[in-house]
Image 1 (cartoon, one colour):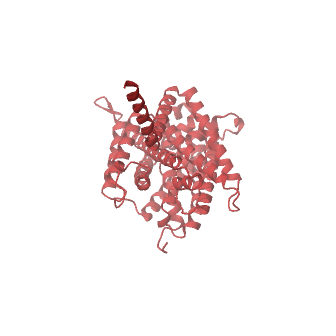
Image 2 (cartoon, rainbow, N blue to C red; image 1 turned 120 degrees about the vertical axis):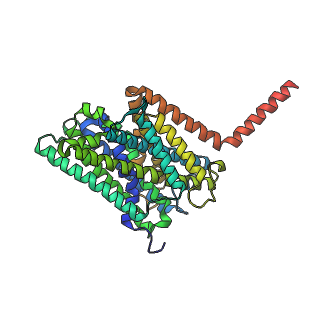
Image 3 (cartoon, rainbow, N blue to C red; image 1 turned 135 degrees about the vertical axis):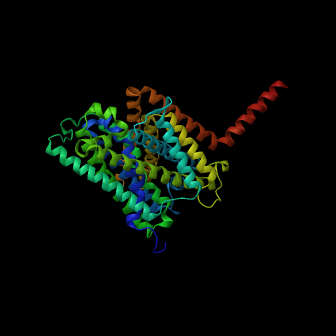
Length: 443
């Protein structure tokens, strides 16, 4: 890699782009309705599991030849192309779920800021969300993408706004005696359930493994960037979580859960604070849609090249992101964000990353015989993901049965499509044998 590649700060900015870029604005209110004043603990727990998954990725990359990402590692260490392809598809659907979540938040903040919830009886949130996705698909088709410098500036600005709001809010809460951490009742599973639901807010750093050719000294820069990005995300999330749950009542969080952070800024910053946070949310979720769409399309392009996706999805030989891939990702994202609820979209996306990061951690654990790989972080990552998944399903089944049904049906549909695609030759042989048997019986 040449000396003009992305350095540590730019790499950390890329990793933070998908987390702080859209995650906190999208899921803070939802997580707070589950964990209440212990929302900060949920973010810490999710961050620990994400850090263990990050360690697993780094170590798999270190011991793997060639270097790569999730699909490469599964193929390399399991030798199972079908499993590798299914992990790739799951990750791709996770990106779609993330974009749908960002688009949902973009629409929610736009509607609340404009004060227009419906036009001619048609709800405006789904329309705004769909238009946002369509707009970023169009931008990517035109070849527009933020530069490394622009990404640095955007992420820096978003972190600055969140830290200022969080710091000011914490000071205000302490002065008024309203600052609380919920430490009197840390027992119970709510923080663990909330951690599972929030897991999608800790994805984004894995994109660095697909950009290694653009990074200066990637073997040294990527691991440092992953750990730094996750640590910064946890600190920022904890700060804004404490402020939000301290300054808003549970009833207010439930009522304004789609725009909870902006609402939390009102007591000490007034309407200006609400507007500043809302605009920051629009910029953050918009840039997160754009970055995830770009990265997701390039990820799909690599899968097409490896015959892990049908070539009808896009042209693997295209310069840049394949146009058909961008359009298809946009269409599926629009369907999710228009017809799905925020709870359902977030749960589905988190479930996808829980599954993928759990598999990566388990793979890293199998490499513990290598002196470069410690057994503890991969084990914690795998166990954490193994706990998160059933807890999320239990939460949805008991408290959100309609969302539970939608998430389960969507996950099953994705699984059936994956199995059908990767086992299509075997299924074709079985079908042919059945047809031959029927014909023999008739004759």
